[in-house]
Image (tube, rainbow, N blue to C red):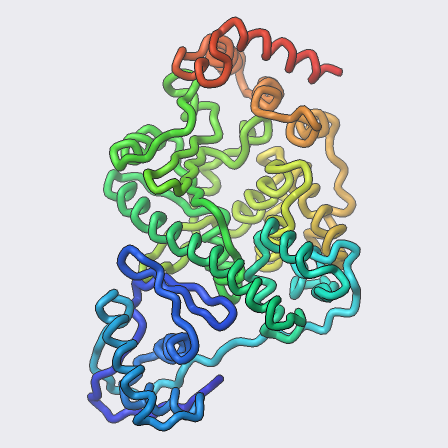
Length: 476
């Protein structure tokens, strides 16, 4: 849809508020206003698109009347009521208009896939990636209920909506309704999380803490043509180790509850991955010192990530994000070390970020951080699951990379069936740089504070027994 608009100079115009948080779905636009999410459908959703540029009430009414084949007099009261409602919620603003901009043109994606994926949902997850020739699945062949369940599980509702709108995912009316509901749930969650993100960044920066947004929101706003394509389920912030204690204090004062205490004071700042916090409304916020627990987290020098951050805009705010090689390496670590079988959406994140990043810089950083093995593994997973061509330099490197024996042993703590925090903690010991560090680390694990032991093991005796059993299994 691209409608040419003309305005009288000096007219009063409406436009979206710069601070509005919103997401698209199938025929529905979700906008977070006040305490509630507003669902805009039909003419209201179309009006929101037209409000991307300053637009007078008269021109907005005329454009919608033309678009829907309605008389201006019929649609005018609806437009006036919508603008009033959005203004009350603080979602639109009024200003003088001196120029004649054009309305935003809706983007459509075309993709001539020619290969059916062995895993139907992988065909959707890889759709549109550079070097990927997979086509989105046929819901009738794959079975729509099972396909929808996989789409929900893999958080691919945004890509499913984009593929459907591009004519690449054929759905009947019931399928459209199912996908609209699934994606609507995901988008409402994203909006609430983004508001919490902005509130949290304000709190932290007010205390002198400099957070970097990583993973979900950063990927959605920096690597996707439309952030609605990339749902997420929590907020992740990377904090300098020297600012961790201040960040924890700010979050506790704001009512956030830490899931588990640190083993001993100062452990997180020196050895830990970070901490997970839960707000009073149940939303989760993860604070990171590094990008993984266990041995691969110990070798990362996060100062490289903080040295030259990138930025992205969210609701009129400028937020820090990871730039270039640190972004790709962190996403690859998350994909390879987060679960035994990487989530498809996480693999897509890696490929998207890598497509615009210098391959030599990624390899150099991964090698310096001693995480080249996990990074190559994540890329090889992506090559296999998305049937990617390996002519891109970074994919070519990953396809021929050989993981060292030391990294292979460390990796087992993340991917073996008996993987877990205890095994990763033991595997991290050789990665520590000095004898003093190793002694402090062992002391914290063997003699942690009672507040740390009780929720997990009830007593230190039971904890020591579990550690012995974990060490025994790790040596097999």
